Length: 125
Image (cartoon, rainbow, N blue to C red; front, side, top):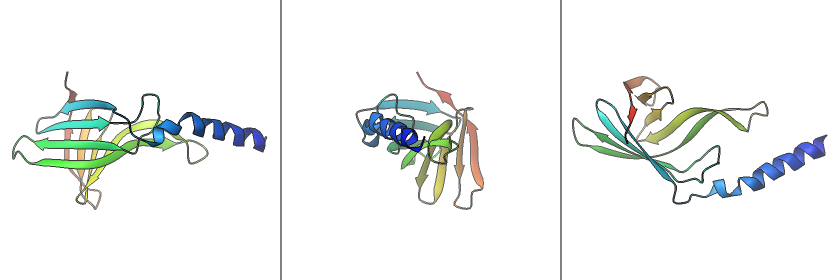
């Protein structure tokens, strides 16, 4: 049984080997009342998780732009490692955490975890 689990894990690892490195990827654009968000998702389609996301966050009020690195955010499976349910995108920059959640929420939280901004987003065409 342990050998079968090992072989299955090895097969999954090899199948997603391309997920470990970015490709040309896909761009997603979102808009909230106060921000324009552009997410570059460079990992190949079919990869469950990606650690190479890039966020460009433009403040409509000030015109300031934040460029942040991020990743997909998931629950983990029973083994504590395998990504499971998608929770959104999470980015870090200058002590702040930027989250784009699948329920349509965009959040900016401080280093203490306190949410400073919470707005609804809409995907741009």
